[in-house]
Amino acid sequence: MNTATIKFDAFESLKNEDCQDRIIEAKKTLGDKIVILGHHYQNETVYRHADYSGDSLKLAQYVQNLDAKYIVFLGVHFMAEVSNILSRPEQITVLPDLSAGCSMADMANLAKVERTYRELSKVLDFDKTITPITYINSAADLKAFCGEHNGIVCTSTNAPNVLDWAFKKREKVLFFPDQNLGRWTGHKMGIAIEDMPVWDPDLPLGGLTEKQILESKVLLWKGHCAVHQMFRLQHIEKFRELHPEGFVISHPESPFEVCQNSDYVGSTEFILNTITQAKPNTKWLVGTELNLVNRLANEMKPEGKLVQFMSHVVCECSTMARIDPQHLSWTLENIIKDNPVNIISVPKKEAELAKLALDRMLEIS
Ligand code: 13P
Ligand code: SF4
Image (cartoon, rainbow, N blue to C red):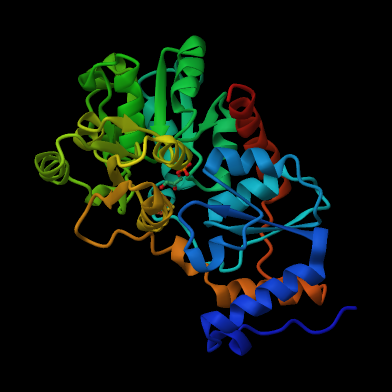
């Protein structure tokens, strides 16, 4: 059956409740032809339809073991690219809204990374001295750059293992695009803060002196997550004053002093597992995206656990939120008509190089 693509206009004004029924129906019709993967930050209205959920690493690992023809990704663009790269050639990855990006991933691009390569090459032999590590929150061409230059990808779960791997190969690391994850991971490995200067890709030599570059261990790309950047030490102090017996848990994309003053730091999956497995009636201040915190707060209520969001400001990831029931039902109904929309397809050469860097990561995860 190959009929014309259904336009999104027909779904735009549908109510969330109406979309819910249509999504359930479409999933029934499609059966094992599709699998829906959902990141923990997705809104409840779509997250409930995910067949599997997880953090970036877990979702990448799922992709390698799926048989469905269509992988519908409830997440952001870089996650869907990883799905396309790691799935089989005949499988199709679909992102319900193409504008679901990641503002942190956009803080690095290939032109800037290649310029960085040229700038650093004025001071040292890049390929012999530096391992480029890209956080999985980055475009596929940056993963390809890492694949080509003996580098690797990391996630918030495996960053310590990846850094360890990198230092066994070469003496320095260029870590992009999240300075906070790089700094926290390096610090936990015992690297001094002064040995991890910030590299500003918009300045000559990254805004550093040759001496600073030569003496550095980790060059931290000047990038961050706008959502996690909102968390403050004062939020933690206030919580501890009110609940001295409580616990603070944060995602490593949070500012350094927030991580330093947290009881636990880890990926979204780690946060979810830690709070789920905690004793009843415990109290938690959580420094990560709002949808995950709200979901945990509701699910933990029956056990008497208090789960509180770290900021007073609403810190929803606005790009994750682009995936709504309207886009999901539109996507599924087009798949039923054999007219998939919003296919994510990384160019072949780029995908091969990016896969090298991803495979290196998966091997040590
Ligand atoms: P996780 O891999 O921990 O799920 O993090 C992804 C992300 O984008 C956090 O902001
Ligand atoms: Fe990107 Fe931050 Fe959103 Fe995670 S929370 S997807 S890092 S913008």
